[in-house]
Amino acid sequence: MSIEVRHITKRFGNFVALNDVSLDFPTGELVALLGPSGCGKTTLLRIIAGMEVPDDGEVFFHGEDATERDVRERKVGFVFQHYALFRHMTVFENIAFGLRVKPRSQRPSNEVIREKVMSLLQLVQMDFLADRYPSQLSGGQRQRVALARALAVEPKVLLLDEPFGALDAKVRKELRRWLRRLHDEIHVTSIFVTHDQEEALEVADRVVLMNRGQVEQQGTPEEVYEAPANPFVYSFLGHVNLFHGRAHGGQIHVGEATLAAPEHADASNAPAVGYARPHELEVERPTPGQTGIAATLERALVVGPYARLELKQQGTDNLIEVELPSERYRSLGLQNGESLLVRPRKLRVFLREASADKSSDYII
Image (cartoon, rainbow, N blue to C red; front, side):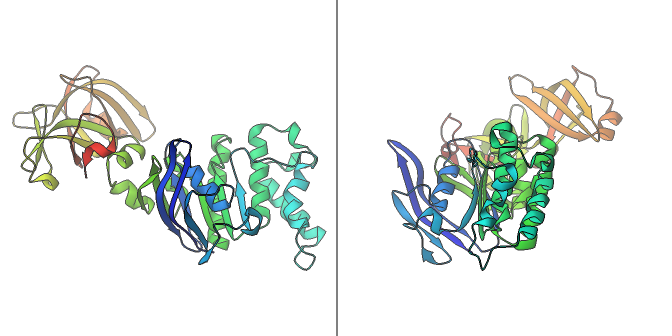
């Protein structure tokens, strides 16, 4: 089932939670709504579910206007952060509930229901708690039951708000993989809200980056990670180093270093910031004629195949994080306190109109 939202605006008093948001969710796509707390992603999900009514705009389910349709008529499965379970039912019966209340002609046999419920319980690693009640479970366990219950009825649309946030790392990773496998099998249109960029990039077909009630960028995980549209997206998707300087004639001058910025060939001594991820930087000892950003190595941490270096840009308080293959780090024989040159293999430069750090202060 496809979903379309058109010009959705939602206010809570003077706070604008969503500001003229329009998005398409094609049939069978798994989409992540990604952004910081308060960006509007959960509000949008609740409007799609029918749990909130927009002040302006429309929601369409498979081409039909569903804006005024009751939540029960939308036939979606949803798991929200604080989804309430039926307290008087066991874990087993909570998960089986949606199957048992189906019309008689569609209702599976008791044997099929039991097999399906037990399979879901094993997936969320709670088969040994089938006879417990919600009050006897931890918050994380209750959330796992809520997820299993939503999936039991195999809904045409699945909406999830931070579904894995309460789980430990190992189980969270397992469930992310399972959700991806489930989606590939049944192709249910799915939208999930998260503030975890790794989760979004790992699971989703498409990622929608939101900030301050608006969509900053959308695209495949590779597109949004490799080609961020603006400084907000760059900063939100993983660690990033910032190099403040001035752009002039297709170059950016950072301290004594001059780096290429061909996208700003027309700039004339304009304030600018260069963005580079830790793995996009190289370090080496200074040699005559070599250019780069002067920095001092403060700390190195080698974990498995990678070494993470923390350097301080000379003459500033700017910290630089570099990620190198551990073999490369060992071959260099670097020592703490050593003066080095940092050179970006890839640098994205944005011009800056003001001194604040908001994305609206940059010329994209």
